[in-house]
Amino acid sequence: MDIEAYLKEKSGLVNPYLKSYFERPLPASVPSVIREAMSYSIMAGGKRLRPILALASYEACGGRPEDIVPCASALEVIHTYSLIHDDLPAMDNDDMRRGRPTNHKVFGEAMAILAGDALLTEAFLMVLDTDGKAGRDALMGAIRELAQASGVGGMVGGQVQDIISEGAEPDPETLHFIHRHKTGALIAASVRIGGILAGADEAVMAALTEYGENLGLAFQIVDDVLDVKGDASVMGKPTGSDQQKKKMTYPALYGVDDSMKKAGELIDRAVDALKPLGEGSEPLREIARYIISRNS
Image 1 (cartoon, rainbow, N blue to C red):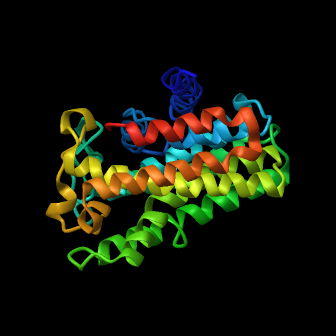
Image 2 (spheres, rainbow, N blue to C red):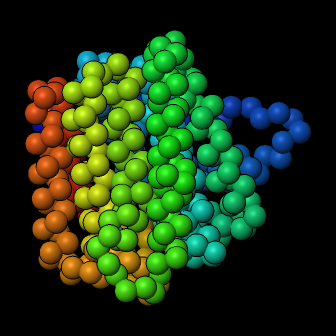
């Protein structure tokens, strides 16, 4: 299959929904700058990987992707909030994201913090827009999955460990924890949410979980490698920042070549995990292969 065409098709479902959602009228008393700050980052582009994974997973379980666009889009909203906060001076202190100034460089630190807070909150309202396309129990399951992956047991916990590990001697256990939680948790949740909304059985959910967990870790390893050898003009942000900040990364511990070998092994495991889903999961397989070859 043509994975580029598939990604374009599915982002063509997500982007119009996001644009429409963030053009909704605000109460008259709410300053318009907050919507400008939110929209600035949410509409800045990006691969839309997390919502596409949810759509592909739902499709692999027999569903129509169009039916869960709001819930899938919420994953992108949470991801975007995390990027706004990651870029802040108190965190990674980055000036560029997706080829243009980071949110706090345009709107100031206080507004960037509030824009991130607002996006996180809106994401859960957005999930409820899926009502009528999924049953109540499925929606509750998706909300629980999203909250767990975003909070202290997932992305936030990984970010905390990432910050307190700066400058420390890399060790495999801590590195694995950071990557599994900071990045891997939301990617795995994206895959699982598709299955949850489709009412997948236990065996299918186990397959999707194994796929998502391996994919999420592989994605972050490739991200680490790209920070070492990627092209900043293609990536839309500076490279080499992990080394400057003495971040705990796979290349720092294992070197670039062994890191890519590890990522390849994880992708193979992810693809193998999908065997119980048959041909309907081919887009998920192709997404996995795409991730190992990406350059941004």
